[in-house]
Length: 216
Image (cartoon, rainbow, N blue to C red):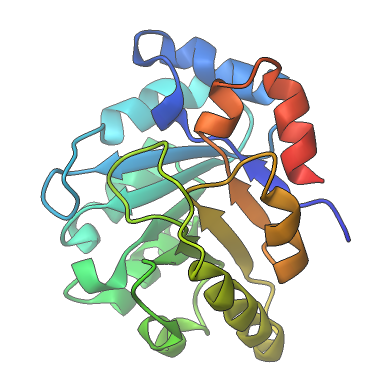
């Protein structure tokens, strides 16, 4: 089983020292920096927006993996790209025109993706498999960090991994939510290629070792 990419979520970092936080993520050996953008409408929490992405961009060479939990993401995706995002993903049910939003991201030379909540299935992304560079499966319902993994999502992981293989395209399959050092091996065996690890990284006694364990 090959190593997977690890993307610590800065939602679990110190917001008063976010530049330092992002620099640490790179120093600890992570592969991406996961940025959770919430608008208080699509999800019941507010985090940060384009200014934060722009502010942290100079502090790391790692790709910024920006997960938009916002309504009508098509209005904002280009601005997130311009702020320094390397991946922009969003929830298709929050968009009035998901294909248009994906095309806007790709036109900026940025990788695009869609996010699937635990109560949604493959039909949500099926029509966009020709475009996406990443599919994100939520292991929890989005809005807050530190939640426990919803076990029923494991069936989704195996199914999505199969569909990606059948597509013949190089699509990353990311799991966001509930990832720990203890359960990461299971997700790797099911076909996940990127693991988001917020609390599991930032609350670990040795974050670098945690990232190493989670990545495999």
